[in-house]
Amino acid sequence: KKTLRLILGDQLNSQHSWFQTADDTVTYVMMEIRSETDYTSHHIQKVVGIFAAMRAFATELQSKNHRVIYLNLSDDDNLQSFDKNITHLVSQHRFTHFEYQFPDEYRVDIILKQLCESLSITSNSVDTEHFFTTRNELGDFFKGKKTFLMESFYRAMRKKHHVLMEDDQPLTGQWNYDSDNRKKLPKEHKPVAPLVFDNDVSAVYDEISKTNIKTIGYINPQNFVWPVNRAQSLALLDFFAIKCLPFFGSYQDAMSPNEWSLYHSRISFSMNLKLLSPKEVIYRVTTEWKSRVHEIEFHQVEGFVRQIIGWREYMRGIYWNKMPEYAKLNFFDHQEKLPEWFWTGKTKMNCLKDAIHQSLHYGYAHHIQRLMVTGNFALLAGVHPDEVDAWYLGIYMDAFEWVEITNTRGMSQFADGGILGTKPYVSSATYIDKMSHYCGSCFYKKGLKTGEKACPFNSLYWDFYDRNEAKLSSNPRIGMMYNIWRKMKTEDKISLLNQADYYLKNINEL
Ligand code: FAD
Ligand code: DLZ
Ligand code: SF4
Image 1 (cartoon, rainbow, N blue to C red):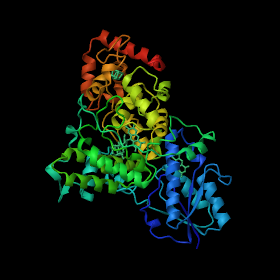
Image 2: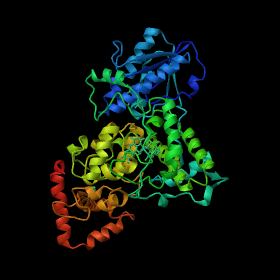
Image 3: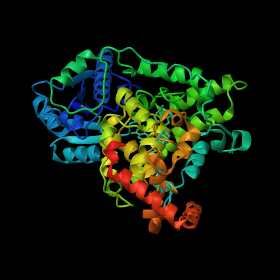
Image 4: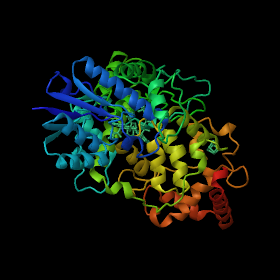
């Protein structure tokens, strides 16, 4: 028997049972290919980071005596897609059996299933041994339900995996501390400086530069800040547990100019590549809390645990339950394009300028920037969800479709009409000002609704509710906004709608 095993670029899990013993009859293959670099325009740091991590992983496997075939992007015999390369390798090396780990993306799942049918040898697929849940677990949990409430899933996960529990009760008696986790950063508070790495990824970068791969964003290949191996990923997790955890919950929704990561962990890239497992992340963080229980408040830890065993697993479950239909949903029938400044950051809107700049510079923005700044704006402006998805799928280091599309199309754009969220996440300047220090130094005035200096969020907000009244007014969580809108004087409504219309027509000049 001669086995070929495929390792995808986001399957760099050295703890996987595949790798426990080296076996001469097994060969692993990893490949840098155009089908993956070109399915969207990725951030240059994302492509470089994934390739650098893939190369480091292949070297690590070889050092442990595993046989590895590694196809570099510019190798002559690289046929640039999973199926072509594997078909070729199978016949070239006379493999008798092919295996892969379940991919996280629907598209790749189909490709690999079809490949196996076309191969003349036997094949098999195995779990990635990464997530807490299986692909179908959430679907089974919510069987027969129209809406999938995250909170009930999260509580079930806490119980099942016994995280922050005392017998079958939540530690402290309370499940949810969201209300403690909405603080603005105090003016004088200087957050910890983020831990960044100093990787030289010039070799990978030079190879990519020689091709015509279309990328977005900036890179400094001599000082690449993201982790590219497990040791660095573990160091980032340590840094988070020691320095950031004590403030994580309190400031998880806070935003501040020039503070690109605040107390966020920035481990999503490592976790999505499977360099870190969510189980070890939960263990590390809850252990840190237990060892500093008088210093670290419970809500800081609960807020973090909720993201990992709640939101992350929940999004994945929705993805496998609703794909492929999910990728076509457009509840509001939005058709607009994203403003051009989404690719440059050249806008006078301070909050958007900052969120887009840091996305271009780091391939990173934290959750509230994604949801309540860029996402909020795209939704209010009526941008087609395909456009919004393409931008998010490209620009972030951690963007893989299973977690990108559910967050973007679902949570942020409400294009699923409420499978995942109970109401659209939209706001006027009030929310952004409440959670950030952006408005004070902005060209636009947060308190103005009309006129040259009026914050665009203010009129676009009412315009959104007005044009979607038929779809939203019966939603019990929104009814109050329609009461306010209906009671507004007609002339005030008209000037708000005119202002919004002007901004929408001149969206590239904002
Ligand atoms: P932290 O704030 O430190 O949180 C810790 C971890 O919790 C994250 O690493 C992540 O794994 C998990 N997490 C937190 N929120 C979510 C969530 N809503 N869904 C899934 N996991 C979550 N996350 C991605 O990993 N990839 C994406 O492509 C992605 N696209 C997004 C698009 C939009 C429009 C929005 C609103 C959110 C998106 N998220 C995405 C979720 C979240 O914003 C990121 O996981 C987070 O910002 C990553 O940074 P961090 O590691 O510092 O997170
Ligand atoms: C995102 C990405 C990129 C840019 N390049 C590669 C690649 O060249 N080879 C590879 O195996 N994987 C890459 N990936 C990650 C894949 O797109 C990812 O494995 C699938 O989307 C499944 O989640
Ligand atoms: Fe953003 Fe409006 Fe505040 Fe400017 S005034 S930072 S555009 S919310």
